Image (cartoon, rainbow, N blue to C red; front, side, top):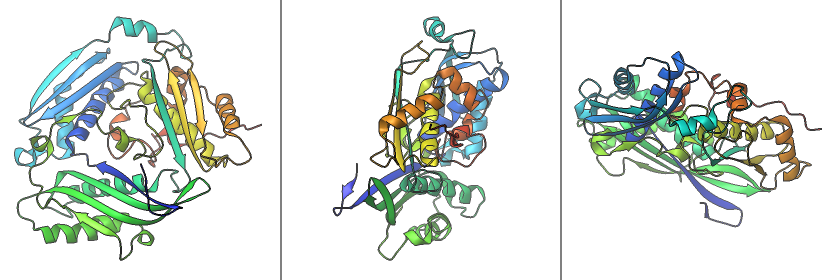
Amino acid sequence: MASETAATEFLFTSESVNEGHPDKICDQVSDAVLDACISQDPTSRVACETCTKTGMIMIFGEITTTATVNYEQVIRDTIKHIGYDDAAKGLDYKSVNVIVAIEEQSPDIAQGVDSTSVEGIGAGDQGIMFGYATDETPSLMPLSHNLATALGSRLTYVRKQNTLNWVRPDGKTQVTVQYTLENGVPVPQRVHTIVISTQHNEDVSQEQIQEDLKEHVIRAVVPEQYLDENTIYHLNPSGRFVIGGPHGDAGLTGRKIIIDSYGGWGAHGGGAFSGKDATKVDRSAAYAARWVAKSLVAAGLCRRVLVQLSYAIGVPYPLSVFVDSYGTAVGKTDEDLARIVNENFDLRPGCIVRDLNLRRPIMAKTACYGHFGREDEDFTWEVPKPLNVN
């Protein structure tokens, strides 16, 4: 994953995409449908996938709910909010063909998850989930991921604020950071390379694109201390990006799982987040694993940590809890840290939902610019838990 440049130095790269990227359109639609169900029926069971291509968008999956939801309106409103209001941009919320193919959750799955008590709720599927935290930034997230995500968010901001009226919704960012590894801890030294590819209108020149991106996006996001005369910039390196959105590429829910999590750091179990209610441990246990990891680092028990959880369908308790502090634990072994986790966190799915208050219509805002490291009171998994370490 890392490219070694010296014995104690390496380069690490993270990428991100804007909310107008075809895959991110789908993540946002799936989570908007989830929120629409949860807002009326907090116990809704939702597994909603979305796909899109030129002039069409389809949701499909399994939903069991007492809510009455106008799915087509939810989809069109989401596309409008993103900014796709003209077919020339790649999609038009007013004329897009909307297809709904939703069935109820399989009763075979439901009987393994249902319970009369919160504590008895079984996992909605088997799987492995990871959480990661590092003290290299105040949010306890990797710097390369934070910068890539923030650049994408800034691109959307300057578009919606009309600061740069040539920017269109689709876009991607990528940041390479030069690190030194000091006693198991990655320490950022400088930004080595920045890549931005943003959709644009027909009228803007390549020179204007590069000038505006440096002035209004990069300098507004990347701390000056990390930029120097040797930082490399690839700004719209293909030379033209007018055709974008679903017109340029098909989109599908769940294809940006590394962008959604830690930008390539730590590990990922493979399960996507968007469109899944909180009984799906792909989502809720991944949030819990981040909560655990951040709590361990915030408590000063280690400077960097990876936490793995695993589950079986219909079984409440996790099958395993694994902790790797990369040798950064302070006065503890990784075995000690795992014991502290088990003593301080109830990682049964129902208890995760209860403790993190996940049955709320807050998931749409997680669907772009990262599920972790965000300063938002609704992201309860970002609030470290005080730990009893005796």
